[in-house]
Amino acid sequence: MIVYLSEHIHPSAVEKLKSYAKVVDTFEEIEKIDAIILRNIDVTKEMIQKAKKLKVIGKHGVGCNTIDLEAAKENTVKVLNTPTANADSVAEMITGLFIMMSRRVYEANLKSRRGEFESVAPSDFLGTELSGKVLGLIGVGNIGQRVASILRNGFNVEVICYDPFLSQERAEELELKKVETLKELLRNSDLVNISVPLTKDTKNLVSGNVFDYFKPNAILVNAARGGIVNEEDLYHALVNKKLQGAACDAFVEEPPTSENKLLSLENFSATPHIGGNTEEALFRAGMQVVDNVINILEGKPAKGLVIG
Image (cartoon, rainbow, N blue to C red; front, side, top):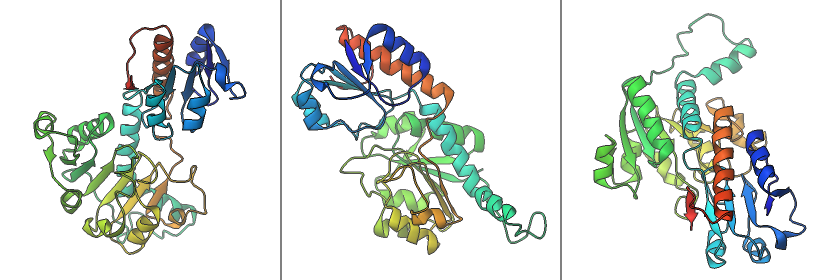
């Protein structure tokens, strides 16, 4: 068996994969490849059609937006992901970003480095507590559920959600109050978290006049995918104080650089898509994707099938 892998995954997972198959990091002989394991690379229709022996594409992570899923289906290529492997890591980071932005920690750090404070606990530099606030979830998958649990149990927040794919019955099981529109969620949320995949329906989901519905004290966190939040519109919303602050771990152009205007704002935090970048999450995701790719190649049942 020949498996393509060019991106970093946990060394233990690489070792297991190499004990089973020949691992290559180029597509020079794509017609000989039996499986592809990826994190962020594009797997196009043209590539899938050329890979005559391709049986499975394994996504290290959740979002499959860089894979041509229609082409995979048309060519009977299975696609799988690791939907729960990084949920704890991403949810913990989202929680940290809410704390950081609510208490203005990032801004305080910048001002401290520049020597701009003249006293401790300055009266004109107040943050807000998370306790007792309303958390609005845009998307209620594994990560959204984990964020809700952490903030509800740790900070006594009320949780509401907007997810067209979530039934009222399931929302009640999760102890969530479901709202029917994004605007209703934004009107009532102090903390807004985005945990949805990037699709044609979610691209620019938060853009334009949608920002008019945020509370002025709201904090927005997007650790999902770039393009769900329109970055130009977010910049103007933050400048015009339509919301208090925002933090993004995902951007249209990654990693983010100083050319992105958002990075010039002190009420905005940028990170280079590190939500799932922990030792524990990398081990879980790496082992899961390798195990399930091997299972498919051996004709055994596999978990995490997106297209089966």
